[in-house]
Image 1 (cartoon, rainbow, N blue to C red):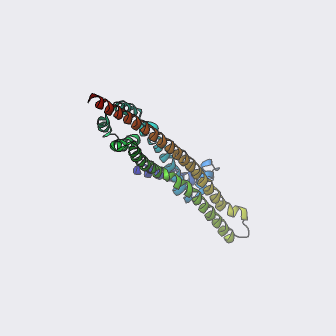
Image 2: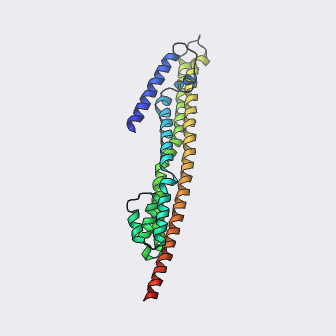
Image 3: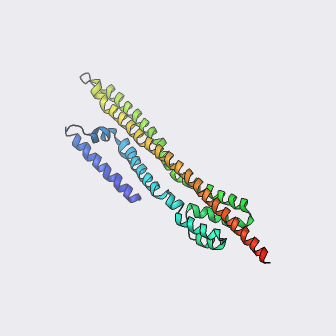
Length: 246
């Protein structure tokens, strides 16, 4: 992952430098020139890599934070069958090699099931909260990028304006102020553009995944409570049947 990121950034840097050299030969400006190259090193080495990291994180979260992995249907159906029959030991054996969000919550509940339903639910809720916080921390990177990218863009704005005023102060009487300041102003505007372009989508994706995690955690806890309730009824039925036989 780190090697591929370094290669991508290196390749992008070479592409930008080649495009900059081509633009300096007097060719008409392209979109690459106007919206990327004119932003300077702040865009090349900070904001464009941040945009690639944001895309990579979003794709990774799409593949890992989903219902089929956190709340597998196969685990639900198997546990429903086992716990409805009151087979808590077989259920725990089945869950021993499972690592999903749902498996962890149900395992915690079953281990405390003999202490009563309330204790089982409390243990399950505790594990669910821990797993939810872990997922929140995982997507927190998007929030960090979304908050710092506009600040970096603002830094580029100030940097570009400083460049413009410096060049205007050094300009000769024959040079037009607008032409002298144009380069710095372009840098200021392009860095602001990229700061917003990276920050807004990152915060939107972060909000979407946070809502998805909350919904999945709530659904996992609901399913776990239903299973524990079914097990309690099955265990009570077994106990009453054993008393009748006595």
